[in-house]
Amino acid sequence: MANYGMESKAGSTTETNPTEWVRMFFSDENLELLNSIMYPKRAEAGSYLYWEGDRADKLYFIKKGRVKITKTSGNGSRITLYMFHTGDLFGQIDPFYDAAQSFDAEVLEDSEFGVIQRKDLEVLLWQHGDLAIDFMKWMAAMQRMTQTKFRDLMLFGKPGALCSLLIRLSNSYGKPGQDQEIKISKRINNTELGEMIGATRESVNRMLSDMRKENVVEIDQGYVVIKDLEYLKNVCNCENCPKEICRV
Amino acid sequence: MANYGMESKAGSTTETNPTEWVRMFFSDENLELLNSIMYPKRAEAGSYLYWEGDRADKLYFIKKGRVKITKTSGNGSRITLYMFHTGDLFGQIDPFYDAAQSFDAEVLEDSEFGVIQRKDLEVLLWQHGDLAIDFMKWMAAMQRMTQTKFRDLMLFGKPGALCSLLIRLSNSYGKPGQDQEIKISKRINNTELGEMIGATRESVNRMLSDMRKENVVEIDQGYVVIKDLEYLKNVCNCENCPKEICRV
DNA sequence: ATTCTTATGTGATGTAGATCACTTACTCCT
DNA sequence: AGGAGTAAGTGATCTACATCACATAAGAAT
Image 1 (cartoon, rainbow over the protein chains, first blue to last red):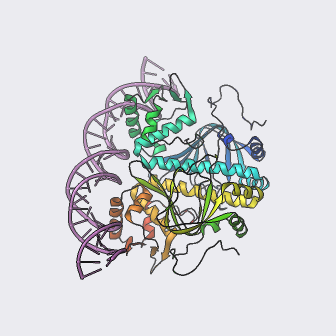
Image 2: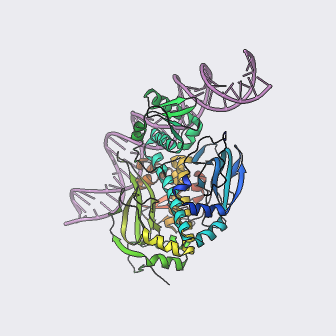
Image 3: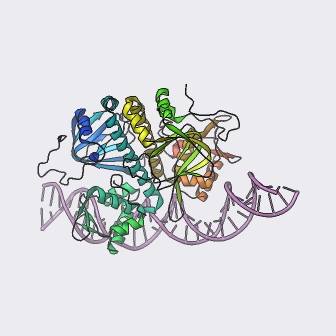
């Protein structure tokens, strides 16, 4: 059984151990194949894995760590498209050879990657039909994830967008607490929450305050705790999408 | 040379003949392979190809016609995610076998499709490595298209979103007129334009009025004519993405 | 502890865009 | 040609959010 260089030593930065998303799409054999063409790379918190404009010809498997995909506009505002973590595969392999990244990849925690080159991947896909199928499933899930975010952000205002985000965070980083409580195991500040839904930190703060008064959420030492998931689902007309696509 | 059932008789509903998008990703041989597993289907303007909740296990190639992918919320508001036309391939093949459509597909013009079943496609991908590669490129383009729309709608307000939309429309349906003018060869009313950017018809109307006064656009018998593309590009910080992904 | 820094919390105010209400202009139909 | 139906156009409000301007709190550094 392959372990893709994952170290499980105690005290690692990534103390949580989320389900490896990639395993939802790839069989062990196919993961092993992908692993065979990966080369290792490290990057520390605060650095950038790539910038907008860099060539888009690689995929990244996160052995350990966390990365955020963002877009910054000229006037300073910024949106976050995705957050990826240990066990995720991400990256843009573009259909045209001169294609460039359209977003930045900011490293949030000291991270280790397995990098897959486009060329190598193509050879592998060409040779292994079942890997190609798994790969297609992974891409389809990414696409659905993007589309459902689109829907959530467009359809139910900022409160809806925030509730959708909290649900997604609970799927990605939620840990059960007492009662039915779910604790988001990553600290994410109001500014960052805002960037994920296209709102200001003040708006996020006010919405969270309101929901705190309504006993929907609670802030425990900077960590968001969800106390009433049903309420959140209601606000954004949650359709109970599978967890594979309902994530940040 | 395959023709995929495309009829070029005069007076067809789809009087324009846009570039076949699918040819940007698939070689003739691979298109022929796809064609071999398609079965024909017709649908008339105003009908729905599928509804939210239907099984998501098919792809559709548009031999002729036009289709719009939308999401309607309980309270009546609606957004349009995509518009597809002659020569486009679209559809969701989901990673999980019980997956359902998350959007509706409304037929805008009498249309003819080639329908591809998930099972058949998988067999084909499994057997033909180079088809799998082309397929991956197509999916990557779809993903980029969704992501760049996301960016355009989030980052520069409604005027930015509208300008981005007009640029995309010009890539999808633009015909050169006198001077540098570009005529959008499909009539799209203000309500529909609004649904594509998450705005009301009134807002769209006012923005178009403003731009008409500034000599940026002109309305010619219900058709939008772009007179100053540079102005539009400016408002939404256009990055001159390739036409394959900058479309509606 | 003491300071420095970075995050949260909230009021006051401004504004983009929605909503409402109505008029005017097309388009289609018999 | 006349009337019905649908879309465009536009003012008057209303409201969701952003912006601005601070105050307070919580961590981190010395």
